Amino acid sequence: MRVGLLTREYPPDVYGGAGVHVEFLARELRDLTDLQVHCWASAKGGESGESGDGVTRHAAAPGLADANEALRSLSVDLSMAAALADRDLVHSHTWYANFGGHAAKLLHGIPHVMTAHSLEPLRPWKAEQLGGGYAVSGWAERTAIEAADAVIAVSHGMRADILDCYPVLDPGRVHVVHNGIDTSLYRPDPGKEALARHGVDAKRPYALFVGRITRQKGVPHLLRAARELDPGVQVVLCAGAPDTPAIDREFRELVAELRALRDGVIWIPEMLPRPEVVQLLTHAAVFVCPSVYEPLGIVNLEAMACGTAVVASAVGGIPEVVEDGVTGELVAYDEKEPAAFESALAGAVNRVVADPAAAARMGEAGRERAVSAFGWDAVARRTVKVYESVLTT
Image (cartoon, rainbow, N blue to C red):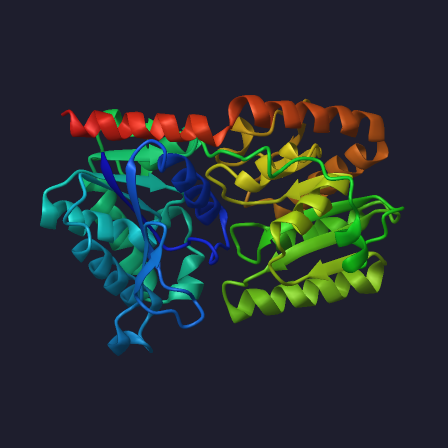
């Protein structure tokens, strides 16, 4: 089976959960299929062309260097589609690559499978980043998803959202294949070099956030909630890649306000190497995921695999990962009551930190759940079954 995998993110340019998903899915699919990966060229001025190991990178059209990001994305999609003539099937990830899969389906007469990691209609804040390009990204996603031979949702909650947003879809074409986790890479690490390197006091408990500075990830809610945390708790923020200058300014202002109220507020603005993230996850008293929208929340799996209790918002697919009262605590989110959410978030973090024995039990249960239910080998096998279903119809 000759598969073309289309994605914006691919190592070394991985900045979000979708990129992590594609990285590990591709690793497993190489043993099960004849796989070619087509991704964006490096964000640091990379050029189009094969880079070895079955990976081809595509740059946006030179004439669109100053154009809206959505138009640049479509030009990459066309380049990808043109390179897929020898494939039996194409599998695209995120709206950045979905139109490439759709164009390949039309051009080459091959099935198109797409994985929905998020949905444009449920991310209205993206208009801040893309301007009028948000209408283009929504069009690209709708066009691809409604014509796809199969749609993979990364959670049951995501499947429900897909069918709500795109009611013309046949429910029989929407399959659930959860995100995965490599528990050999994400596992408890006793080392503390990363803590020392970034100024984290290993003798004090800390609440950890890892994620991009976006509306979706809800980090402003966490910064306001942190005002109510026990004074002995450090707040460690591995937060970078702001979507817009506006949210970057808001984040910086909230960090400054929090630092004026308490000590132990540590902001790490760069994307850290995986081993450093694993150490920070391992030694956190609690991992906090305040997302306002999250199809699954792979970062929660990473924390659980490192044996750390999780406090997370009960949105999207998160309740399918974090078992309330067993691997952590879930906090109800209502966009109309942000202050209530922030207070409840602080209360949950304080409870977990105040009972280290219970937190340790949650961490152990989280590790067991990550190992037993979310291995990438199983994710790849389930994905191949979806491929087989569309090739035999």
